[in-house]
Image (tube, rainbow, N blue to C red; front, top):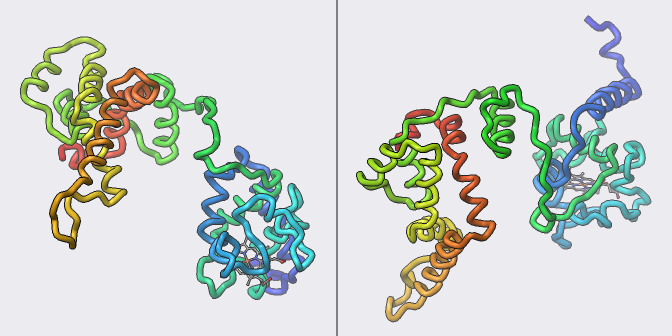
Length: 298
Ligand code: HEC
């Protein structure tokens, strides 16, 4: 097919690679360090270029901005803003030399072509670092463009619809009221609705019927219990001392403190409760679209 293909030399290969990269570099929104780059470095590089000094190779650490740009013992710099040729990082992830490629072949965690493109685009765009997202003040983002702007009812919906479109999924129509109250009750309190609560919801024909249910659930003491459950599970909370003799135990004081904090937070009119209300009031759309019906009934 391509008679010259077998005799492609290294130069030809590099030229082709540069072309592929320059095409992909010129496309799309700028790379987001926290969302796209940090996870790749963390998964594929930190084992040898991360915080663990004992395992660090070539004196290079890629978990700190200033370290990534400094001159290494070899005289190279892993990162040079906007300069693909001078950045050792780019050379090492795009090279065809199996002795130089990063991560090393025997490490067994090669980068995908997409990941290589992301890192390369990031360097080309200036290798901009971001603080860990937990320390970055949130900024209101632009609403994404969506093809059906009759579906979204508020800002969050635009983001949901954008993701659904990317996944090739269409939102279902809104579920039956009985399904909605059942889901909301289990999600927010871990308990099913009572018959009276279902009847009251069915009888409420107002536009804000669902919001009223959500408000009621958010101010239920069981909301605090339900939210505390995940928290306590993560912290490996147990009501027993485990192997030890279960004499007088005081851990429940902390359990109750967690539950109370979450309950009183939800009762107050602070921004957390307003946010959880705003977010929760949109969830039926999300769950409808992303759960097959068989899940929705559980
Ligand atoms: C299993 C360990 C290991 C992992 C994982 C690893 N490296 Fe390396 N890296 C090394 C070793 C060893 C060297 C020094 C030997 C060499 O230069 O090939 C090195 C050298 C480098 C250098 C050259 C430093 C200099 O002084 O010139 C760069 C740049 C680099 N790695 C980038 C990366 C990137 C980017 C990743 C992740 C995509 C990565 N490495 C993952 C072990 C690793």
